Image (cartoon, rainbow, N blue to C red):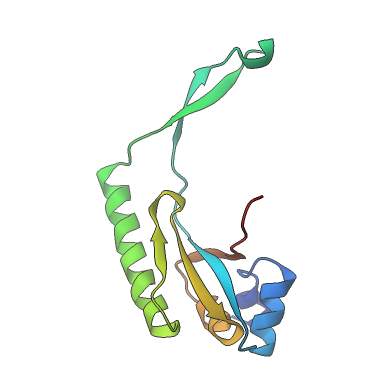
Length: 125
């Protein structure tokens, strides 16, 4: 896999620049696992008078899917703990980790086959 393809998992020019230059500057990031999305239950909605469907619940995971998710999360945590200066925080509902990483660390993290994407962790206003 070329360095360019590896960096494709890093979402946004800022993270790609940090990784490609191996910067020691740290960024707060969300590290998303490459797992199937959760299934959402729908209900009929009359909001706004338009009708249609609206999400109303997250469907329970099949035991096999839950086992696969937990295994992938554990493997990814172990990998991240070898790369990062401090342990990542598991965000179960998001199926992602939050962490602080340097550009050099991002370059290594982007190689993991268990990851879908790495994004800047931004505060919502």
